[in-house]
Amino acid sequence: MKTFVNGKIWQWPSPAAEDAAHTFAQWMTVSDDGEVLDVGSGDPPSAVETEDLQGALVLPGLHDSHIHVSMLGESAEWLDLAGCRSFDDFKELLRKYDAAYPDKAWVVGIGWAQDELSSSARYPSRQDVDAVIKDRPVILHRACWHIAVVNTKALEIAGVDLTAKSHDVAHGVIDVDENGATGILREDIVEKHANEPSLDLRVKCLRNALQRCVSSGLTAVHTNDNDAWQVYTKLQKEDSGGLPVRVHLTPSIHELGKPTIPLPGACDGLVSCHRMKIFSDGSLGAETAALRIPYKGTENKGILMNSDEDLVKKISDATAAGYRVEIHAIGDRATEQVLAALRAANVSPEKRPIITHCQILGEDLIAQMREQGVIGNIQPSFTVTDASYVRKRLEDTVLPFSYCWKRMLENGVACAGGSDAPIETCNPFQGIYDAIYRHKPNRPEDVLLPEERLSFAEALSLYTRGGAFAAMEENYLGQIAPGFCADFVVLRQDVTEDHATLVAPDLVESVWVNGRKTYQYDRTAAASRAQHDFSNSLLPGKNGPRRVCRCCR
Image (cartoon, rainbow, N blue to C red; front, top):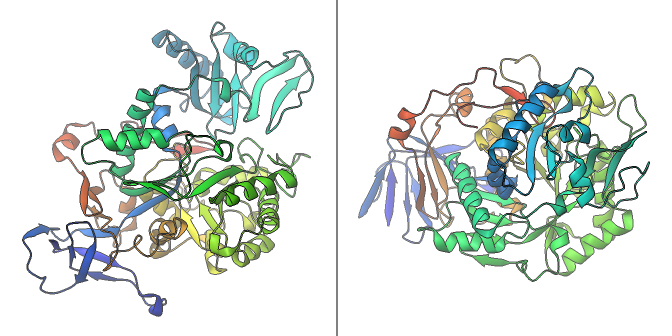
């Protein structure tokens, strides 16, 4: 048994006193197998082993309820286009990457945004890419991941008719002009032809990504990674001490029936699988999110990835196989279709279906989510990076029900918080900060729907109790209490006293999972690093500028 003393340990009120305020304990005892035995204040019980918290704030384990850990790791190997401010920048970065990595079968990049490349917001074309690289395929993702530009070589590999004026493709769009295919692809068209990284490279990328997650303060990730069960279990066996965080793996519906997919309920150490991911629409930045009212000034309502019948079948197939379902829906038309499909597939509230993103809703949709027991898996940082685009692209009648986290909670919709990393930072404290403030750095007056700001406790709950509820593990995760797993985070500053410190560098002192320390802040390494540089730190994000520390990105 181990006793943690001299702490400021966050305590949620009991369910019977839901309106009561949170409190703090001073000590807790943890069993050798990682269970919290007792929590209290005053004189702690005697113990063989004692950890002095030295007055530090201790928070319950933090979940990222929507992340792509594999992409987070792999993207570190890709061309980073996030700083491009012109087509000249775009081509120069591509040219340097081509010279630096001549042996890569595919050149893969991410981070461009058309609004940053030119004042006319022109999309890049295959001709732009061909001007730099012709002899090997190139796919460059927009920052939202829902749109990409490819070169002619990539289109040829995919079997695309370059001169056709229209293309009949499932789950996406190939943009054309008077000369044929432009090279812009919306949703899933060409990426499946790109070479998969080797198992060893995937293990390396996952290891690095998980280290980023735990050093940010996470104790659990709910991750949508394809064909990843083998990679996580291999990593868990190879690394001394196992994984640094809990991994709730969410494979995609197209993996259903594959021999490599884990069975529902599979659990191997800290890796488990209970639900399956389905896409219903695209993204706001790519104007492929499916809306009930067209995008401002256009007739475009976005893209539904499935017919009504196909979506019902996908949900039915997943639930019949024993999986819970998590469905990507950004636009209100997509959410409307998803809710109808859940009803048609007889998915009961007890199964806790999840709609991920919930960015554009309506009063009717919020009521249906509550009645159907649908969890809203939300990304608070989108509120900040999307604000200018929301105002630019959505009609005024839609705005009051956009990114309406407070309204959802007050209307009884259970919500969990996530990042969608690598789209946004995997740092949960940035997400908590954005849920509270909803404005860009140094722009406190520019708040998107200020009435939707959350309190600190509400924001923290998204990443603790909300994440545990989404995982259906609320009886042993999400709080520091007797009988719960000893998952917690020790901080170097008291963010309950000064919320601005949520975005302070090097905030996390240590992370504990199942009573085992999986991360410890290294003061020596921190002292040797360059000072955090936030100069010109607003780089293009998925739908607008995002905050990036230039020495940490």
